[in-house]
Amino acid sequence: IYGEVRTPQQVILTRKATLLELLSFSGGVTEEAGGMIQVFRTQSPLCSDSTEDSNWTAEANGGLDVPSRMYSLSSLKQGREEANPIIYPGDVVVVQKASPVYITGEVIAPQGIYLKESGLSLTEAIAKIGGVRREAKTKDIKIYRLKSNSKDREIISVNYDLIKKGTQKDVMLEPYDIVEVDKSKKSLLQNI
Image (tube, rainbow, N blue to C red; front, side, top):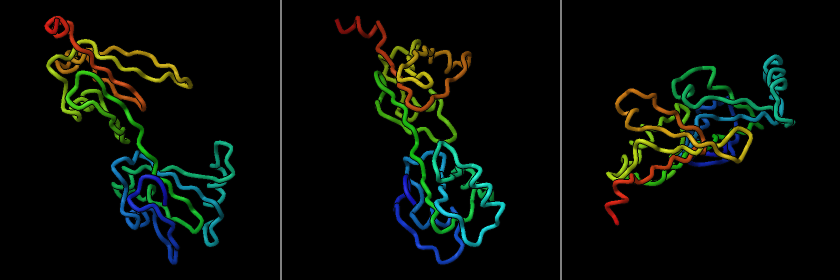
């Protein structure tokens, strides 16, 4: 069991064990855990159903020789049976790290925040870091977002005042967004 668990380790299986049991055995997930767990099946289980084994083989992707499946951490926490598979000897369990967003500028505590599976809106992100400073230019907050399949970023301008009033829809943040809150012109003139 690797990735964002408190005690990454190799576990010797002496009986059937579920994904949830093994995560608990490893101390649970860390604060930096994202919403997905990937299970790699490095070898065919000795005592498994042949149809299950063929399903895993069919799902091999990305040009890898090792088939894998993704499981939702929130579904697992809700006790859904389909999110809590039996783990067999040779399986590799990886709890994926959450993707960050970065908030800079005229905010109380500029920092990176991890995006969880449930998502994060601009309003929630600003609240998490203590809000904006008095000098903040809230009518024009910039979100620098990666374009798909590119290292270039597009700029999204957001009027935070209208979002708070409920007249503009809140923006859902995406992995690696950079949110920049500038100083208002009034506060710049006051400093001269």
